[in-house]
Amino acid sequence: MMPKELSPITSRVEAEGVTSLSFLPMSVADLDEVLAIESSSHIHPWTRGNFSDSLSAGHWAYCIRPELDKAVKGSYLDPQVLWAYCILFPAVDELHLLNITVSPNLRQLGIGSRMMSAIEGVAVQQNMPRIILEVRPSNLSAVKLYEKIGYESIGLRKNYYPVNPETGSREDAIVMAKSIKLEP
Ligand SMILES: CC(C)(COP(=O)(O)OP(=O)(O)OC[C@H]1O[C@@H](n2cnc3c(N)ncnc32)[C@H](O)[C@@H]1OP(=O)(O)O)[C@@H](O)C(=O)NCCC(=O)NCCS
Image (tube, rainbow, N blue to C red; front, top):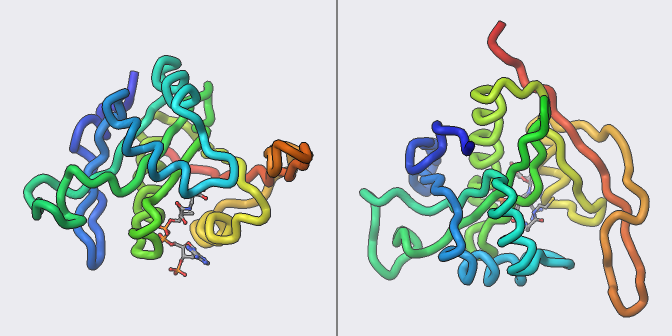
């Protein structure tokens, strides 16, 4: 079951300068918008099949949109416009962050940081003492974001990511983790 706190429009992360964010459960109907952002954001983007499988597997997938009460039709404050999304996989005592992507036009506005903070809230709510993720060493924006908010490198997965399917070249993944303080 998806954590109640984030479904739907219940988690508000106060944003400086932008607005509050709504986390809405991702559905198949969101996938055209999600794929448009995904394909322009990753070296090896997830396919529609990857997203559908993830939704069918019950992963916690969220679309991030502006708050409905701040809607301005046709602008970026239109809730029709997808700002970002994330996908979480709850393991027994670890929350795996499988995908976090902010729309290219809306980067460096603090949205990624606020999403990461909401994700920590999920870990606390679900009593999960650790969040874990993989990142390409070449993805400096993401590595800097994670380091800034206290993630530490805990290992390397060799040749984890495909880089060029034609040459078969691959890139390692840095495994990063953050311990989450839980209520005693
Ligand atoms: C990584 C990503 C989610 C960050 O989202 P964002 O909304 O732009 O991040 P924020 O605005 O909250 O930035 C927070 C911090 O991240 C780091 N950062 C973000 N973009 C950066 C950039 N282009 N260059 C260097 N550092 C960057 C900085 O440390 C920044 O803090 P600062 O503003 O005080 O310098 C976004 O760049 C993205 O969607 N990238 C493509 C998808 C991706 O790579 N996802 C991660 C896969 S592991």
